[in-house]
Image (cartoon, rainbow, N blue to C red; front, side, top):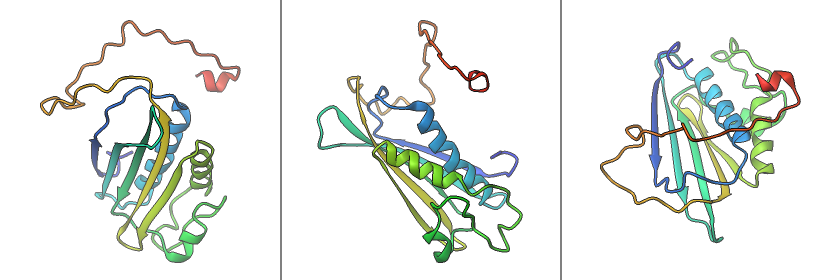
Length: 177
């Protein structure tokens, strides 16, 4: 979708020292995809979308705060629409966004998932300038931090999945697919 709209995608990872945490990866993926999907839909072709992932300290032992933000230079959200942004079936209705399809459930569901996980979701937006969603969730960590090496980039590291076994248990046929 990003290529279809000729968007420029920027991904930055800061201080991500723990790669293994205890949490619901399916729900986190749903949060990311809902927010990213909105950024793609509400950013005019050729726009820019920036994703940031950051690990921050937490006052609790063996828990870290993970922050995800998605910023775009799209249409932005009017002050009136911001008040109802996380309400079910509410959609931004402007001349610029009238053609965009959707049920208006994505952000309501996203907020509910974030809150059930004990996290927060905030939005910073200005009409005509873009929108940034910021999600913060605490997760228990299960691995020791690796030494941060300036020369290695996340993209350059190879990950060996050959010894990993996965058991998938799902009673719904559609979900199994």
